[in-house]
Image 1 (cartoon, one colour):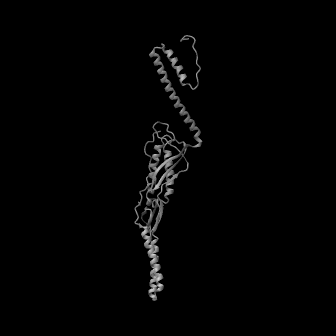
Image 2 (image 1 turned 90 degrees about the vertical axis):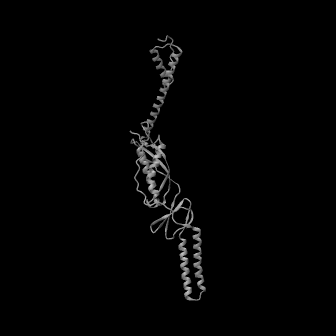
Length: 309
């Protein structure tokens, strides 16, 4: 199987039709003060109408007071309390008129509608998904994604429900990454879900960003929280991993034993301790390899005769 070191196939999402910009608003303290003055002025006009004797003047004061009070009340309906980590998406007769991100008391046109949207950092953890990896082995995996709304206009108008959109696209990205890479790479240099977690999570973040960018969502971080073989093959794969570990350990033991035997023969020859012919060297090498590579304690055999008996 070829190594998967190329970038994953990214989805082709549509370009956003609207982007966030700042809505025109003024400080809510001044608007509240003016509204209260207008409301009190209207009530004062109505009350003062009782002291007027003329019928026409009294009616004019009452009507004027009612109009001023209603106008002041309607103007105060444009006040908005914006908390830190929140924003208000402003619409006027269906048209997007900007976003209020400045926290505190703000005033906008009272005829507009203001939709509250959270800009706080959020976590989304997927359920444990069962998929097949690149080799067709069933595996289980789950991931957690840290995200926040970056463009409130896109989050409001480009998708129906941005929270559900992020949830669905996260699951789709996790499934796509899982089928692109194996759980364990059989060939050297190939990426695997277990052996190259950092590289795979980076690719997951890139794909997630491409999927949710149309909704105005920023992916801050993504990590796998669960990764394992499915229960039906977990036992067989564990035996395979154990066998691989045993083979690797044996290979290291043999490499070390060969080096020790080579060093022993070289030292015997260098110091002229004993002269060995080819047959005796082969026997010595065989005995040393058995002693060094065996997994059990050896039983020494004492030779009471000559070297060749």
